Image (tube, rainbow, N blue to C red; front, side):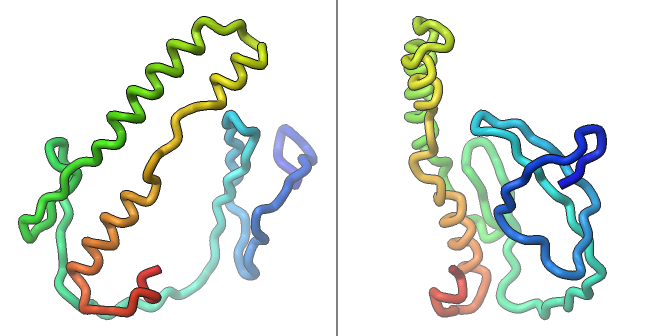
Length: 142
């Protein structure tokens, strides 16, 4: 891939660019695991409008509750973030006593807190979707 001000850069593509799409913008992001390129694509494709169906549901995000629907159903906020915050605090305290660049430092740093339930938000969204739509097969929602 040829980028302005950088020249040719080796790229390992995670997927190919579809036909009829052109690259409008490239953004280089540096993360702990390496450099990544985010591409913005544009195409002249007509997207058909969908017919409204089911019961419309409004969502309000708040502090006391994770979200509240327009039907008055509150969803409590997740508590697993509290445990993750405590674990992160412990790892940070351990990390400050390690010498930078040592194997123990790298091991402590890489042992960062990962979400114990990454699909929690997806499950909440599906619950709201099922609430507002008529019954469907489970395979259509996946």
